[in-house]
Length: 376
Image 1 (tube, rainbow, N blue to C red):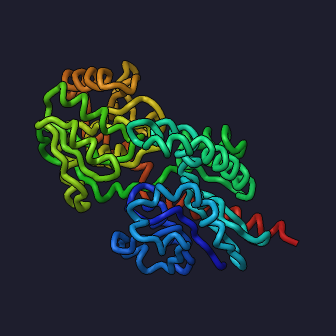
Image 2 (image 1 turned 135 degrees about the vertical axis):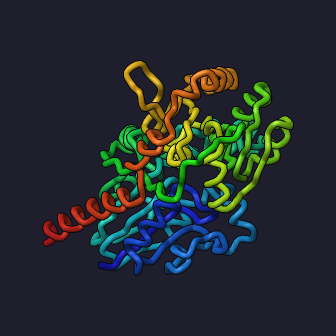
């Protein structure tokens, strides 16, 4: 079977790229199409793949400023005309699912979300804080074009897989398409429970507007508790500027270092609304409880403390404000002994990489067989 994989861009190793790694392992001979690729950040599993980039790759510093190319990304992804492939598997949160195919190809999209920049989170990406006046003036016109393109190209996908129930509902609302939910992979075997815990809270995140790391900083400025932040991104200057002396930025560190900080933190702070959210699962795989904003994918991964439940994995704050987060952390300090590290870790095993790979293989095998049986 001749297979093509399609991914929006390869500029960092986040949740979407972890899914892509599994796809590349399943289809080791596949061609991988992507808008741009920063090859020095790729793990061995992706470096050995036949990667084909778009014309955007020729622009200087595109791997750093790729977000500014959003209006022309549909044109860039459509430059690839994939012919002669039996299966096209797109990994899409932006434009990858809009790839052009011929009528003989089966197109399955693993959808991380419909394009978040133009739908539910557009107000955060293009707020006064995160976008200049010219960008804010132009964006409403670009937004309408991108929304029309996003919906139109969804019609060409044969089957959608959603990374969460949250995203499945979004796919139905925006595209009017059904989807099956297969949670993304977490390498739970890599993470371990520590014998002791240190006196700090932890954030692990890209510094994007919708991640709401600013909210965590404002809350911990008031609390005065130690907060360590791992990651980098477009909002780094603003975040460092508002952070107090009790907040430490650790930058991008290697996996072993992240593993250590996960296992030693008092609790993991998750202030944004995510499609699903891999980092809370990694924290829980390390036996640590999660304090999360009670909306989006966290509702599917974090088990709150209730009278009926003796195996909680964290707690929620209901309003996305610094006040609400402060109250949640203060509540956690009072009930910290109610969380069992082993029970928290056991909860995450259903998100393991092997479970993901098995479900993906079964889904694709079934759809490929059905397609072959129904072909003339």
